Length: 334
Image (cartoon, helix red, strand yellow):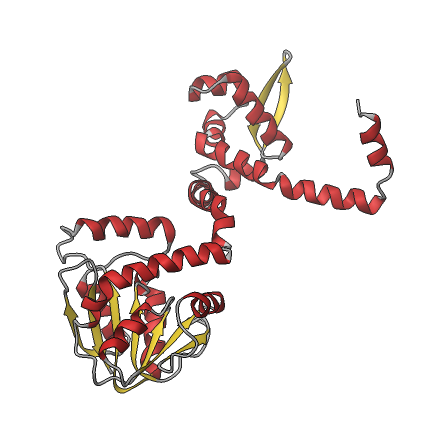
C-alpha cells in the first residue's frame, strides 16, 4: 500500500511526468534484461530446450544443469516475460519451451545464431562498461595518468632518444606527446630544434597548465586527433607507446598518414617494449601484452612486426636499437 506521501507524489504528476518517469526507469532496468538473456545463453537453457524437443519444467531444467531450482524458475519466468521462452501449465506446474525468436537466434546450433555475440557482450563488453565513469575522465584522473607517463619518460626517455643520432632533425612532431617529457629530453641534446606536441584537447590543456611553461620558445602544442585530423609536415615524428595501442589495420592507417606528411629524408621514431622474435620474453613485455588485451585493442610486438608495419606504410632503411632498459626504439626513413 502506498504511503500518503507517495500517493500525493503520484497524484501530482502529470501525464508527461509519468511518461518521463517510465522512460527513465526503463533505461535504469535495461541491463537487467540483457544480463538475463546473457545468463540464459551461458547456462545453455535455450540449447537444452531445443535438444529436448518438448517443454521442460524448472525442476527438470535445474536437474540437467545442476542449478538451484528456485533461481532457475525465476530466470525462466523472466525470459517468459521477455518473450524469449513460452510457458504452459500441466498439473499446476510450469513447463517451458523456446519461442521462435530464441530458436532462431539464441540456440547455439542455429544457422542464424547470435549466441557467440551474446557471450562476447556478456563476458567482455558488459564488464568493461562497469568502468565507464573512469573512462570519461575528469582532469584529476587525466592529470594522474599524465604524471605517470611523465615519470616513465623521465626514467627511460634519455636512453631511447640517444639510441639514434637525431641531430639532423629540426622540426619534430611528438604524436600523443602528453606531458612533453620527450620534447624536453630531445631539446636537452638538440637545442636548435622545435618540438610540437600533438594530443587531444584536454591533454594539451592539462600539459600547458602543469608541465610545460608558457615561455618555452621551442615547445608548442597542436590540439587534435591524429586519426581524424591532419598531421602537419615535419622532419621527425615521435610515437612513444602509441602504436602498441592499436590493431595492425589502425597502425597502418596512422603510419601511412605520417608517411604522407613526412618531409623527404625525414623519419618516424617508434618507442615500444619489444618481444623476442621467438616470443620467449622478456617477461615484462609479455605481461604488458596481456595488459593491453584488457585495456586496448593493441598488443606488444616483435621487431619484425614493427618492421613490416613501417615497410608496408612506405618507410625504408628501418633500424631497431635496443637500450638495455625496458623500452627500445625503431626508426624508419622516408
